[in-house]
Image (cartoon, rainbow over all chains, first blue to last red; front, side):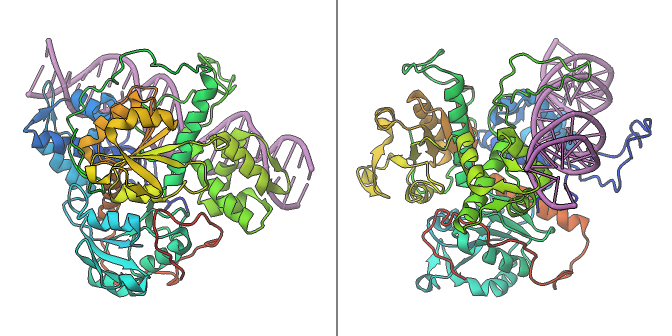
Length: 280
Length: 280
DNA sequence: TTATGTGAACATCTTCACAGCG
DNA sequence: CGCTGTGAAGATGTTCACATAA
């Protein structure tokens, strides 16, 4: 699968100006269809992060930020941040910085957060519960409106305020509630089957938590969250680290005992998926 | 893109050291320290996926696979898969394919799965429970050996067989049980604080589920799993889709009703984080 | 003078296409 | 021949560095 053919088009971005950047060089074929919506995939992911940081600033009544400040808070370098923001337009003021409120608005617009996306969660186990209780994911815009499972004991039982339906009803319920995003939190076994049903029900975006590679038609977008893979990547780094650094010093390494953390208090966004309240 | 592997890394993303002989072209300066362990970050993530697919094949008693078959099952193209495998060595047989068992062994070795990584989960809410019950994540190698929270009512209560400790005990308990990976499943508020403690306790790899950008010293590796971000990325695609395709047809799209899915039964790996058993 | 916005250099990742081993 | 392994071409993504606007 990998992808639709399209996705990330070339990066000429905002049309406007000069029609053709370097027409020279016979080789480079000037692109097929040149749509303007060309925001690098990687930049989209970061915009979401900037948005969260900005929301935090907004709550703390901070009205202006420089690319440098925002960058540090988001954990990226400022040049990258500026370039990312440039993809959505020029909303900064040279010599000053960006207006928090403006940026929030523009990023939300770009990410399509101005319109709601109704979410269906399939598989009401531990994770499913967590998702259901998430209650309209952080930053709003993602109300969970349908829950599915196949355990008879769960049918009709409300979780996070929404009654659980049987996965056989996916087509009907998803259509009725106009679900646009499906979150698959089932065991690996049933995932592909559930996915197929969602697709047949017209759902075009899927968040997959099951440890399987879903096969979908190209018009469907799948994002996967795979704990095992994340763990193994960390494992790789642990392994690499221990073999590169023959050190075995147990005490503390160079530098202060307390890890540096410039702006640790900037963010907000609260509760991830839990009920625990950590107040250190 | 559909189903990426990567997922925005955190922090600075230590340059991966290009390595490689590439002596051609006068321009390229041979580079400073040229460590051999140069497996592209992106490839590491995919190796974990290949591993899962291979495990599935192994269980079904399949002993040999071609790059093409494996590629389809993993959702990547075969050239990429071959290149990825080439980073860990040449274990295929031209004209034939790869031996499943051999590949599994080599990938496990590369990912450092031959040695266990003890995991600590901090924040025993819905997600924390899910993680705790995960019981030694899929593909083994990741036993959860410590749980932390600050709710007095949870202290000592065993979850998934492990008693919950207070986050103040992170240093002691992590040291005693030799924790190498910390999974932060707390609300945003306490995340940075918990992270700092883990780092001080010597944990060098962190899986962060809290919606915050953690600030850590560079020797610490952070991977983040951010639901809100994933949702927003999907939202972006939903939005883009609807504005590019002025269609509003509600009925079914072209093609068969059932989505194509070549090898949907190849994978195994079971239960993601739930208790639900889907058997369609 | 400060900090944005961006062309261009650089680095990383992906895909092609084919040499060459079995 | 079939399929792996890989150099080299092509994309994408990141960083630099500076012209430019307020």
